[in-house]
Image (cartoon, rainbow, N blue to C red; front, side, top):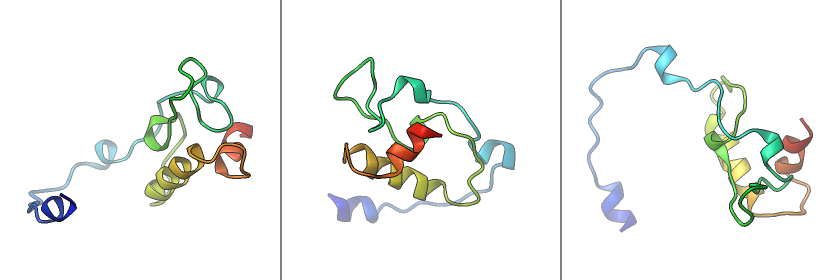
Length: 88
């Protein structure tokens, strides 16, 4: 399946203006999450990446932030960015 997805041709037809291309804020508030990025209202459901209310632009590191919070949400109790995010 991964091979089939990778084989899909994508054609870039143009660029979007900067105000449409960058996400800047919005999402699930920190006070609605545990330090492990679990939704307090829905135990067992975790949020990461652009689901979170965080300020951007990230200077090109948005994907890294998404990957890091995704990884952190799956390692509750570890000293990870999830704890750092909860303290911010």
